[in-house]
Image 1 (tube, rainbow, N blue to C red):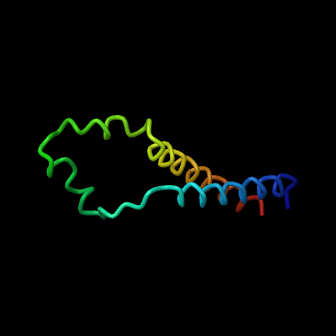
Image 2: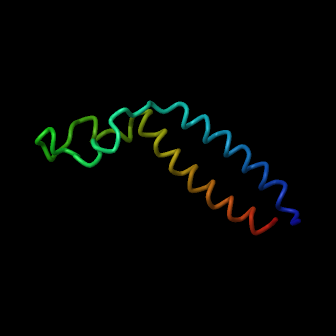
Length: 85
């Protein structure tokens, strides 16, 4: 066992708890897969709405971004801890 294993394992546990909290804070999406495939075809406008253009400035957009970043860190840290074990 490497001397880095224990500190990385602690960071890993904190990251796991953080991801759980972030995912639970997000709003549920009831639209399902069909709405994602339709895209803007249902509305007829290709420009998108004001909300779609400024989604990254909202809390929901930030939580989505943090979820993606946390997922990538979770994956990378899982691989590193697997190699160190």
